[in-house]
Image (cartoon, rainbow, N blue to C red):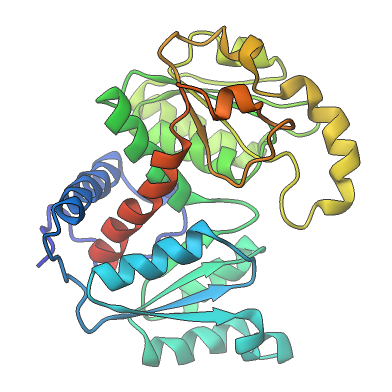
Length: 313
């Protein structure tokens, strides 16, 4: 049985904003425990007999492999469903798809473009729906990020995290997550590429409860100043390929390089959700340097998502 400090069975995981700080910490504590068990080859088949449907309308390396392996190590079964495997592209509604899949599966993970589609899927499904990524949010990534930060820094609360780049789904989930975890956050983007105003507003509301500072700026040096954690992401996300040439030009001053990270704390850690474009959003010197923890971060997608699955399914 999963140790149940909190009963999260049956809950959807669409956004970190939907969970309390204590619930998020419970997920991270279980992730740490499951990682330790896996390293010691201690079986933990908490989801024996359970099935997870994985809907991919956006391709992925880390999300697919980590969720598939997670279900296997938990004793369950995962079913990969590409856009071509479902009748949605032939006109079946998201609501009807949710109703049908609920009769077969114990949970659904979806990685897609529209966040509204995920919300609709969750509304009509009778089983937990996990947001594996949308254009708006990427909460599973931030759970793994927090597990990595906690491992390297020994804590979350009281740290400063700087995000430099596009105000995208990773940025949005970091805003939500930092406000819950007690991490000061500073976001630096070019003008016109700031994070969603509604998400910033909700983050500021949560920040009043946890006492963190939230800074949105166009100055990367200001954001990175004395940061314990520096994070970036690709400048051009899936679906934005036609904008790539423009974005490379606009974002050039926001490259995470040695000059920029010299303003962070000497023991800062560097995070990137991957895949990375060396020479664009980050230099080789930084991502392959001694402060980079991107491979631990990628591994922790597995452990954080195992905790999530074990708690929800």
